[in-house]
Image 1 (cartoon, rainbow, N blue to C red):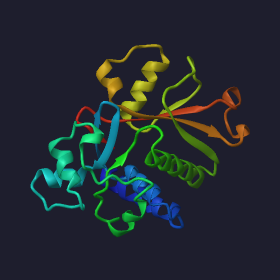
Image 2: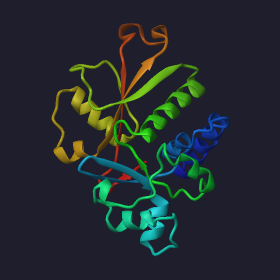
Image 3: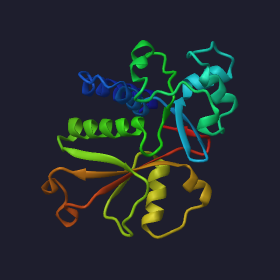
Length: 216
């Protein structure tokens, strides 16, 4: 199927799932399901901006956002978070999203402990419940503590390959590990809904960016 059709289908499903949700950060985080993102990663700062908007600015498109932050993201994409004046959507200014929700010009931080990453976890929970009827809890984790975990799912092809290698005890190249943006732990509310031999054990998820910095 054409990728655009899959993206549009995901958007329609999420529109239904999030119809009654008033948390702007969840709505922005949900865009990761159907709009490609450009990742900026350096010195612990993980930031995602809408790829289409970034490319528009790179091509000399009109400025968007009160602070011109995306323009700086293009020219200084690898600079640390604290040195950029980005239009970052966070818990303190989340209501601004409603005035620009169709412009896709807000950057979000996906660092462990940040509000946008927690919102993404809630969207994953809603997605699972809607599509499978299974209630789960998802939270971000800084690392996988289990030496031999039972189950993992990559949220993209790069993450799947990386988790497979780590589970087998292999050592991926450092640059591939550096492209790992976030790790998550998923727990079933009812262990009886899991396969019997791994019932009660967590499922680990991962989100990565490609070599080109895209996150899809």
